[in-house]
Amino acid sequence: MEKASVNLMKQMNLNMIRRVMKQSGSATKPQLAHKTGLSVVTINSLVKHLVHCGELFEEENQVSSGGRPALTYRYNYNYSLALVLHMVEEQSEDVINASVVNLNEEILKQERYVYQNFNPDILFQCIDRLIEEFESIKVIGIGIPGQSVDGVITVTSHELLYGMRLTEQLESTYGLPVVVENDVNAAISGYAYREQAADDQCIVGIYFPEKYPPGMGTYLNGGVIKGKNGMAGEIKYLPVDVDWTKPLNVEAFHEIACRILQSVNAVLAPDMIVIYKEQLDQEAFLTEWNNYLTRHSIPTCPELVFEQSVARDYADGLKWLALSEL
Image 1: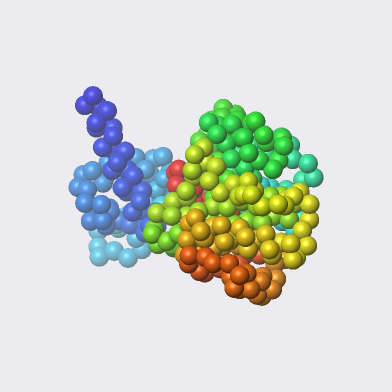
Image 2: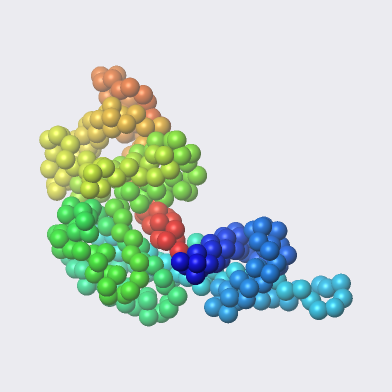
């Protein structure tokens, strides 16, 4: 029991040093002792461990007041990497975007795969290739158009994903932790992270793909509202008379989108709604929305933000979620 407590304390102290080094990039031992509150003896031991395993690099200071030059330690942001993949629709094409990201949120490599009919083998082939190239990958983050319940994907617009135990299959195949997140939840997380949203701010993201039903994510209290079995935001089940598998003309889309916004405002009264839709005429939509408000009441009027592509926020959200595991 005593040994376990000692090991736990060591890990806590190591993580404290890691946090300081990730933020500062480099530091001397006295600087680390000052910033962490740890003794110089403890710092000496833990820094030696981190240098030995390659997480810190030693660098001699060029300027010295005499005697042996002091050592500066530089953090190795490539010590642990995240592999982030997200399935998304871009310009009516189904795409898997893959990125290898380091601990400084720098993208070391990006790949883009266009596919006609989704097959899970596409994911595994992509992961195989990048893990072989980057041995320091220590977590996998995947964004999917759907939700999983108890590890099983039960709601998705890709039939071959339905029923998969994706997390379980990936973890058993690669021996790495896996983070699987819904596409819109990841996107609104990425938007909130990028904009440094306040924890008490309620931000709703609504994604309207061209070929698939829409989805919604809600950021509140510093996180995403998941609901029972993670099913919050499945707005394709709203009682609106529309076949999402068929193209909508502009007028029909405007009317249905406005009805969805009205429903969201009635339930959540968000501060902001981020609308993700390619090729949306923002001015025409705002005109229709304002006309709609003259005929229908809502409790509050949120700020509307328009994003032509969901890809950036989607990728940022997954990157943030995956790196949080490291």
